[in-house]
View 1 (cartoon, one colour):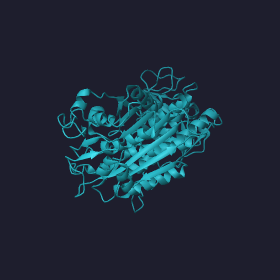
View 2: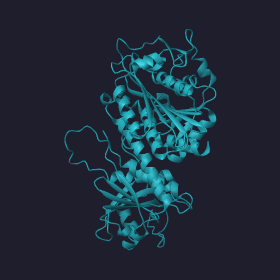
View 3: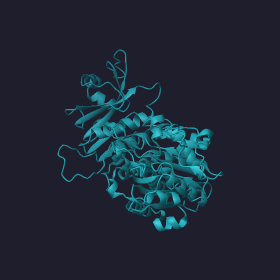
View 4: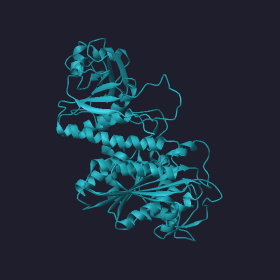
Length: 523
């Protein structure tokens, strides 16, 4: 099922004269006396872009907003009926925090503000954003942030309700972004890119939010393959027989406990003119539901394990964005899919599994299934040939313990991990490089196989690092690689905030797209 879409366009009409249902302005928090020239009153300062609207209110706009409780706190939304002072019937002021010194707000501040206000304006079909944008080299990044925030904050999963919800207002259908020149080619390109990338993020969210009975491995594989082929990409789907014949022991082992057999989907993008230069591989974990298998999880909160395929959703959606953006670099994606279920045919603690690259793994915990399917997929990616390998997965609860719900953990080749961090910071999907210590690997030595699946001696200690250490065994020495653990950032179970809505977040689609584009441009 597909969530309702939002259209996005540019406008350079005076915001006070726009025929929209609501006009959005930014407000900063400020201390000090009123400044008649700046429009400050008490603790508020209007952001740039609101000048004509402030003039229509005879300089009393900030005073009125303050009386309504506005503080300028980031993401705060205060609505004010205009009563005919401007064309739009409603002004929505969104908080941007303290005014930055000599600069426009940071892109992520704008992204979160746009997301918050567009979500708050559900029920208003047509909304215009007149937020502070710089007029220098930072303008494209700021415009991209506003556009992405509006499209992502307005996302709502279509859901499964059978009856209309009379109190549930429809998401904003059309967003106009106010700029100095709506015909500017750079601005138009940013809007087009934001629409493509946000569309991929929204699709990733749809897949994560879909009920697990509707995305068991064969069905999810068909859905991804259909979307990829429609985008002009080449697709190969390996079923359970092909996986067994091909030696994908990890994927087969995890999937054998379910009546819905596993799949491996390979998606190929070849740039126009053929593949030249560096080659990129993307790998995403696609456990469509994770009970833990024989090492079964506690029942509390298990329903959220429908999101254990968030890495696969992100990688598949990234490929759709890549197909549309057409970077000049070859990209192969590998999406292993399985359902980890307990049954008479499930794999067991104590089993020894032969992986795609020939290594034999002693299974100690069937709930560490993600690394099993990923090991096969990463080994296949290296066998096919790649220079850079980015893998993302909801791999460990240790990531949440270490870094929380917002910051992903990244492990692998140090230089590439720093690149992921830099890009993540730029796009608003932060990641933090973590080590892969020798003692963690030593503890995964097995008496009966090449490696144990987990470090039994360390138990939960260094849990996130154990996952990365295991995956390193399936990457060849000539490949730069990064494992991005998104156990926390991929799914938001709290109230909506900024451009995050409840449920799947689409992390790290925007990071992966930017990494591919950067490699295409810089190698």
